[in-house]
Image (cartoon, rainbow, N blue to C red; front, side, top):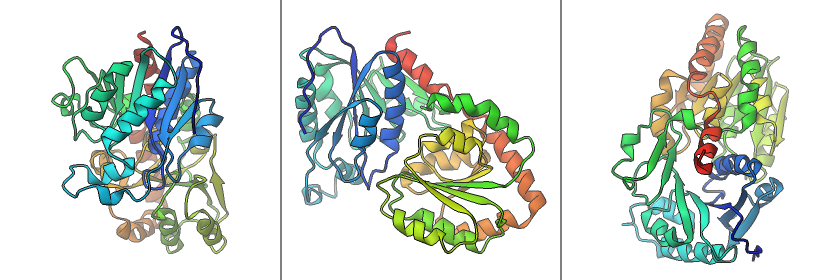
Length: 378
């Protein structure tokens, strides 16, 4: 797809280089969209450059009012990568080599303007300083969103919203002039989470269990949702408890999940591509969720959570979060855990109260505002 924009050297605009796919999931695009929406509200035009992977989120990005340039997909690229590559898995997510991706990104930017971008924002595990150095001449500043702290970056601003992450983890990985912002205080949350926070915390003063929310990523390629539902069958979750499952339109197991819910004793609703997650979380009493960016959304609202680690890049945060929320590192233990969790009603309500109070301390939902102000130079 070719996207042509009329050149205007007076316009300030920001380009995001980020991907979504069945393998990558939707989290990287979603947190970039949060920031892009905030910048748009300040009059900044945001353009996304994404590779045309299966499961890309072009439609959602465009529906949010942002432009998208799709880089062509590359088929059967895995044989081109050697096992010696330090980021083998993530390079395969990129779908090509950094050099090729950089050249394609530069070509895309050149269709937009003849002047330098104000900011280039990069959120991709497969990209590092080699890629960023090639893009340097085409932008005034580079921002990297990361949570791995495992590779060098050539950037002016680095954000890692992981709870417990210290800026010292990145000091040797970025230039001296780079501003490093770390920790869940800077979590990129949409403004509605801060708006729903007071209501959500207020209703948790008297713990109850009338609504269980299950949200395991927009894609959930390994069908963790189905495994959670199977584990709930032998638990003591009250039959009067309503279950709401949130999934994305590209989730490969969506129809299987819908069929599975018909065999279960609870009232279950499967929601797809919702736009009111803050409201839904605020009105839920417990969540079984993935260890991704929605972690900070749940914490902002004090939503008691049983968090499942579903990818290796979630382990660091998961270990540090154990004192704030319930963390399940291996899905194999989930059935026994849920059986015990729901067995004792008095213990259950005490646990819900403790989890809510501890998790709400992690973020108050103003991270996006802070990052936006920094980008605008305020």
